[in-house]
Length: 406
Image (cartoon, rainbow, N blue to C red; front, side):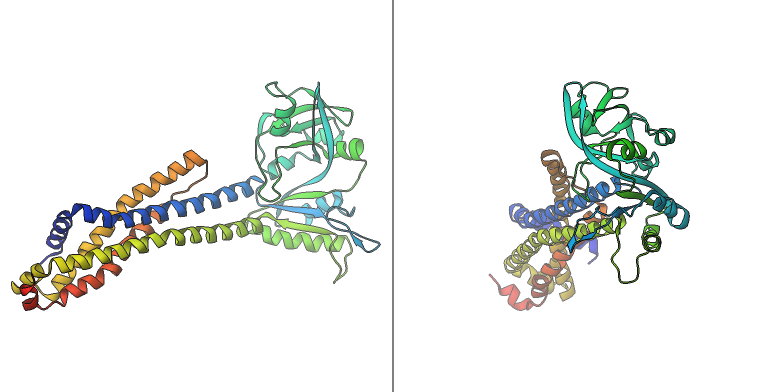
């Protein structure tokens, strides 16, 4: 008997008990749908975290000033004054894996516009900072290198600052006061949202030339941080090692002594987040796949009932020439057909559930073709695994005893 004839017989046998077949497929439908939705949810969360990290900058490394020991008290990060502008120029000159760098210092200040005011952080840097951070402008432009050289009173503001100070008013060209000094707003940054690394609002910021901040706002001549861009993501690991070796040499740190700086590679954070995302996706998929196993047990149960009900039919088939392999193949294909039909309907259910989760809850759900293929293959495997025992039992029936069965 050829395969297509067996499949047609299997479909007719299942169609004779539509309600029972539908209820049997329900477990597979729920299982496949749950696997697709849960895996999509995990992959969506993983993608969202990666996008947040990527939004912080391109192949970015963060070099920060380190701790200091004062009379036995170890102060927090950012307390040393050893990180200076010449360190940044040395990094650009002597580290071949580095593509760009921008100095940084910051302070807290109250920003005033008209009758409104807003407390935020003020960062001093240079124009290349915006390229390193991949930070686009929604209005206006960045300040220039000439502004840095002349310590001009110009500022670029984030979206959070713009909303709280200007509302619907055009911010570019307006004058705000920072520590009682007037600053002209030359640009408004595009919204970035929350930082995946620090958890703070990246848009709650005002950025001014580094010289303006140091000479007019803080009086400090050292740097709090240096933003570095590597030539590629893979090169960021080499860049980190080159920067550490260079700064230890420049700061005359002896072997065994603690660094007075730290270097953080965002690629490390991205790799860690990616690994955590894969674990979460695997966990969610594993939990959802339990329902597939329950559906498989339902298939085995119904197929055993079907073998009992069709004992006489099996005897007649064997009496007219059907072999044990034919009978076994017949019932096995019925189980696989049940699983595959349930799997196809489950795909539609899973994709629909994913879009429903996205629209109702606002969560990012990424339905990948690989997850769909895996779910279908797994449903077919469930049909084969749980259908084998009933099919084997049917093939081992004694034809004479089967014909006598009432």
